[in-house]
Each structure stands twice: as C-alpha cells, then as structure tokens.
Length: 420
Image (tube, rainbow, N blue to C red):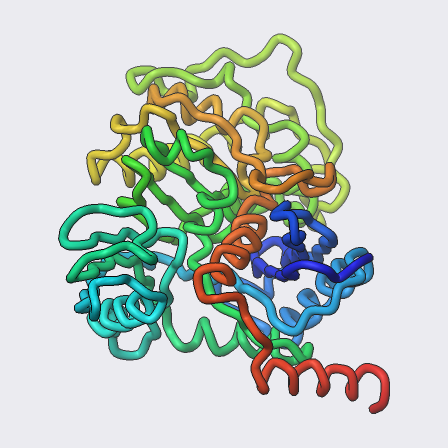
C-alpha cells in the first residue's frame, strides 16, 4: 500500500482486549483505516493499569503485528489511550500576551504550557487533549485563533492527572517494540470523540464507555466537554457474578452474558422487586461446559436471567447516579451513548433508557471514509477515537517530523527483528 499521506497508529490497552489501529490521511484530506488487530489481554490490564508487563507486551505485539501486516505502513510512534479508576479530567486556564497583535502557533504553545503549569499535581503528570480545547481572544470565544488579531489569548484547556505508574508501564510496552509514544490521550475523551456527531456535542450528549473493569463518562454541552471521568466499575461485574454463582469459567460466563443478554421481562419499577417477576412459561435448560467439580452442569435460563438482571440493574444505577449527582442526566437532548465492549450486551441500552427516561443508543466508530465491518462495533470506538485524536494532534502541533529518538527507535526495532 502506498505510504503517501500522514500515517498514524493508535493503541487501546483494555481489560478484555488490546486493540491497535493504523490509519492514513491522504493528500486529498480523506481519513482511511489501513490496518487493525486485537489480542485478548487475559487480565494483564486492570482498571487501566498494567498488571503483568510481559503479558501486556505480548498482547500489544500480537495486535500490532496484525495491524502492520494488513496496513503495510511503516510506523515509528503510537498514540496511546490511558485511564485509571476514579480519575477526572479538569479545565485549566492559560493566558499569553499576543505580540504585534497577530496570533501565531507559538502563542498557542505558550498558552498550553501556562495552563499545564496550573494542572501539575504531585506524583502524576498532566495529560492534555487537543480536541477539547477552548480559546478566547480578548475574552471573545473563537474556534481557531490562529492568524486572528487580538491582544490576549486565553486557553481553557483540559488536563488529566494520571500517575507515573500508569504512564511508565504503558510506555514500556510500546517501547519494547521499538516504537515511541507520540502522545497519551484520556480514553473516555477518545471514546466520545470517536462516536459523537457535531450535532451531539452542540446539543448535549453523554458518552458512557463501558469497559470490563473501568468505565468512563464524558458529557458535552454547547460543543464543549463539561464533564470527563473514569470510574472503578464496569460490565465485568456482570460476568464475575455469573461465573461465581454458576461456578463456571470467566470465558463461559462471558459467552452466556453475550448470548442471552438482559431479559427485559424482569424489568419492574422501583416499587416492584424483580424477585416477584413471573417466571417465563418457556423457561429453558442451559447446559454448562466448564463447571467446577460438584457444581450443577445445567441451569434454568431464569436463574441466569436473574443474575444478569440484578447486576445490570445495579450498573444502570451507577451510570444514572453519577450523572444525576452532577445534575446532568436530564440535560442531554441527544441522549446517552454507550460504547465499549459492555455495549454489546443485548438490551443494556434498553434498560438504561427504561430506568433513566433518557434516550439511549449504542455508539460505533465515526469519522473515517470507510469503517471495516470487523471493527464497526462499540468496543472499537475508543481506539478509533485515539486514532482520530492522533490526526488532530499532528495537525495542531505542526505535523510531526520524526525526532532523533523516534528514528533511533525504528532502527533499534529493525536490529532486534531482522539482525539480532
């Protein structure tokens, strides 16, 4: 494949799977996905943190090799999603005086630096996000201040404080493959950026990125991010309950949850306990394949339904409670958008709608000329957003000539793979 145009790679280290995308912006300005790959994380990532560096590196290598083989593009750096439990992203302000009254790229750079100074916290590094920036020129909001005339440029910029532990171990996984980290981006912001339309951002919408062990919530109003955070709960709790109660493997529990989903017949209002719901007249027997010794090898579907429903109900309460606490749940004209692997659980969007009264839909990747069928799914939304962010970052920072470090990384990778 031709390498003409700007090539970008992205990785999302998820609790369930590590996913890699490679894309290219053509000279004509079209965005194309040229390669993709994924590998099961196998519990080497938890709450956004690497738990086993060797296993995480192996998963990244497998996903990366598949994406590169498909793409045929040469890459030297990767944009990486990053998040941790109960981490928030906050706005900070940076001002700069505009010499000669004409805003130049260096003024934006200085405003970002000034804002970052106020965001620094002990034991962590601040991570910015180009796509959530707000700019004012002489206190007037502007979309893009470059080449505009004014005296004082103000940036209201979003920074996320994440621990050095999270960053350093993700960086090591990437550098083990002879690549450098082009930039980190807060995964919930990337997920929202990867699936929302401009109309969603303008009118008001919330994106809930449902991972296995960690979920993110981002809220847009008037085209701006007004809330962004990560939380220590996810759809893995449903799978864990099924595995524990039925005494089966996590893999089989995952299959059961995805195959059967949530039984909406069990839905009842808060005044009617779900335990009083009438059992289905068509209750069927499910054969289990991987039970522990002495555990039943069959169950009634109604038993599975009850386990899944109760935990899904609790997850819905966590989502709605988090938004309601901030008085945002009923300020979403474009509704709730759920992404991540958890969005694949059948009827989860429906139960969120039934309990919240807010229109809820499943978010899938947007923003490319064509989305391959294999990745046109909610679990690919975050890494698609990271890739899209990569293109925006390249453009905002002047594109990206290769640095000496990135060039050396490519040379070292070549030596390890083909000579050593």
